[in-house]
Every structure is written in C-alpha cells, then in structure tokens.
Image 1: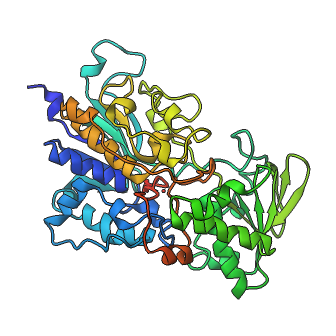
Image 2: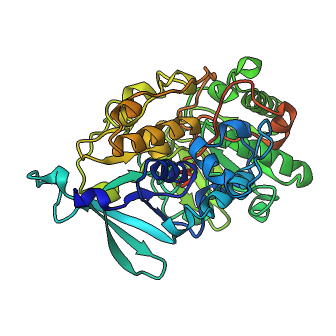
Length: 457
C-alpha cells in the first residue's frame, strides 16, 4: 500500500468551503487535517458578521456538511430566510466545526506559512508526484511545525489581502503611512465601529457591493449623527455598475441595494466623485488628504477601502502552479470567470479538472480559486470541493461530473471586494424574505469566509 495515501489531506482554512471540503473528504474515506489561522472556524466572516446576505439559507448549506450536522441534533435554520454573517457562523459553521467528526481534526490559531514537496523545492522534477507535501504551520505564540500530508486543498480565501487604494495595482504613494486612517473593508458602522465614523468626514473608495453596503450604513448613521459627511470615490466615469439591474436584477435584495444607493446619491446624502483614481495619500494632523491622478483632492477623517481582494500566493511559492496571467485563477478557469466578460450566473460549473495544477494533488478552491475575480458564489465552492474530494479518492468519473445550475444575476462589479452574492443591507434584505434565483452566499472574504471573507474559505 502506498504510504503517502495513508497520510491526511491538509485543508487550509475553516470557513464554509474549507469545512465542506473536510466533510466531503470524510465521506470519501480520507482523513482531513484542517488549519485555521483565526481563533475559531469562520473567523474571517466574523469580521463582517453584522452584514446580511443576498441569498437564503437553502443555498448556503453544503450537502455533506449537513449530513454531518444531522447526526448531532442540529436544527436547520428556516431555508427561505436571509442570514447575517454572524448567523452563518453561529447557526452553521460553529456547530459544524464542533461535530465529533471535525472537531478533533481542526486546528485553530494555526497559520499556514508555506507549502512544498517534502525535501524538494519547485526546481526538482524526478519522482515529484510521488512525494508527500510539507505544510509549515505557525501557531499563536510563534511555534513553527511541519506537517506531512498526502494532498493539499487551499481554501484560505482572500480576506487578509485586500487590493491597494492606488491605481495600476500598486499602493498609492503614502498609503502605508496613512494606515491609521484606513478602516477595514466592511466596518460595522452602526455598531462595533460606530465611534470611528459618527460625526466624521468619511471617504468610501470602490464601485462594488462592499462600497454600497458601507455607504448605505453611513447614510443611516448620518440621520442620527448629522455632522457625519459621506464622500464616495470611484475610478470609473459613473456608478451605474454599482446601481446594477434594479428591478431586473436576478437577486431582488441586490437590485434593491443599487436602487437605494442611487436615491441617496441623487438626494445629496452621498457626495459622489467619479473618475477618481487615487495617486497619493497625505497624512494630516486631523485626517488624511486623498489626491486623484488628475490633481483633485478630497480631505477625510477616515477612508474605507472597498477595492477588492487578491490571493496570497506567497505561501505557495515552492509549488508548481499554472495561473491565469490576468486574474490569477487556475489557467483553465481564468477565461470562464474574467469579470470583464462574465457575471456570476454565466460562470460554468467546474471541479477538479479545471482546478488542477502541475503540482499533483494540490488544489486551490473557494474564493481564492477565483484569484482577483469577484464573481465567486458559495454553491460553486461546494461543488468544487465535492469534485476535488472525489478526485483525491480516485473516483475520476464523479470528479469530472459536475452538477450546478447558476442564474444570470445581473451586473457583477469588478472591484466589489467580495463574492458576487455580496451582502445586502438589512432593510433591503428584510423586504425580500428570500431570493428568487439559486444564489449561494458571499465568502471569500472567507470565510477565511467564505466571504473565507480569509477569507471567506
């Protein structure tokens, strides 16, 4: 018997996709070993637990994960309800991580800092595919340990690596020095982070659903704190992509989000600045001055970066990857998800075959598999890991047979900073009750996340 096959399979990230991967591995008779950088499962989603999702519960649950939960006395949430990020954690991820099947296989506070082949850097070829992987893990407190595994599923999401504020993919000049004036991508404006925004001059940067949510929350805060000033900067010539399809949007909650935002801009509650590509940030005694490429400037007390995310590929430096040069997704997947040509619902279902790399038995799944594209759907991630688990178990037929129907869901922003089914504001979500089209949730924010958002995983 091949000794490598008796080793566990490393799963990086304990968000929705990572835990689902572990559940599918167990059903295939494989042993998962889950590494989560945060203190708890779904830690990245906990950063935006105040956000309500576009998609109802019935599209946020993985089948293999539910089968594990069903044996524990778990009560399924109402499948037509739209959960908050916090409810996704409390009512699904936390009980899932605590099941007798997963709890002993989950290590929290365990950040993966490198993955390689045992005894080989990426230049060595001979017998490479027969060697196990080495996963180097740093624990809270600084202890570092290597783990030997048969395969690796990277579901770490993208939440920990946001895109910079500057243009051309680079940080704006002075961005690092102004870090104290830059908030998290989805701050809890009405709750945990209220003191940082009430009565302040706030600049939201970005043209996606993360920006829309934050702007609407700030508008609510401004009603209670009239001294709050809301500025919104987008690189493009208009905000039409953020406004979306309105009543024609495949996701009613998301359509209402865009329509509501448009009304706030038209009413003057939000001051919109288009064509505002950021060149530099200059720290001031009382805030920060943000300069556009064309020389315009905006002064703010705090800047909210809703500019999207990118995958952390540093930990995979010694592996042989085949990535699309544009979006940094697996090469075969890249053209199918490029946000310039595809919305969420036009992405084809895919599994292990499209996710494969030259590095045998290594897969990137979930939000991180989409690289810089924001069009990821949670149901897509569940189908990914079902297929990958089948492939690792040697069931090629099941791995190559993918089943997933995705709706056409209107316009997907290219810098939303979230997955395509990004969160909905509370009021809009409450009005819809459920979504008309099968739409899984945001993660990759990752649920490391998904959302990883590390994301959303």
